[in-house]
Length: 197
Image (spheres, rainbow, N blue to C red):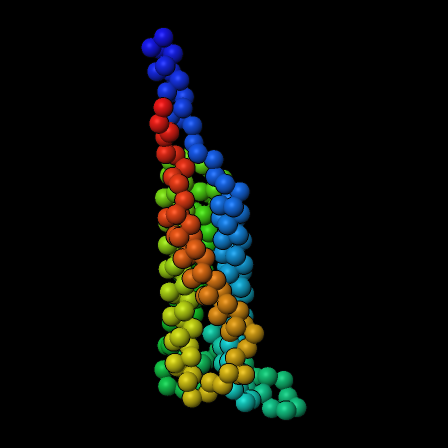
């Protein structure tokens, strides 16, 4: 009789609490939005043309000039723009933007793995993924801010291109998903918490 009670207690102790539909839906939504942010940020960094000021186009990779009738003339030498410290500053913005994408990819992978493989480390993986998304936000926003500060004399609200706004949206999504992920993890029940007999 005692052996049966001990075995029943062991089986009940191994049973995991089921996640609610709402929790699973929120976690799936966070992963989807983080994926969208990674795509937006990647496209924005690869294109890199962020600011149009008159007949000049400033980007992470090129500096372009254009007249009314001619094709844009783009140069990789950002020193030709005659903006102090532009080459160094844009190089920094480009680097931190790329690092933000890399950190977000690793964070997204941890989020997905924590959902697919439900084990004792799943919640920790989810938390680490959310922290990496927060790091991505810090890097991405830092790159945007340094670009705007460098070109503050040329900046107008309508001068920012679609690629700049893509990076801005991605940065916002990194922040929103990171905070949401950490919050969801803190208010939900541990997945491997044993039930008392």
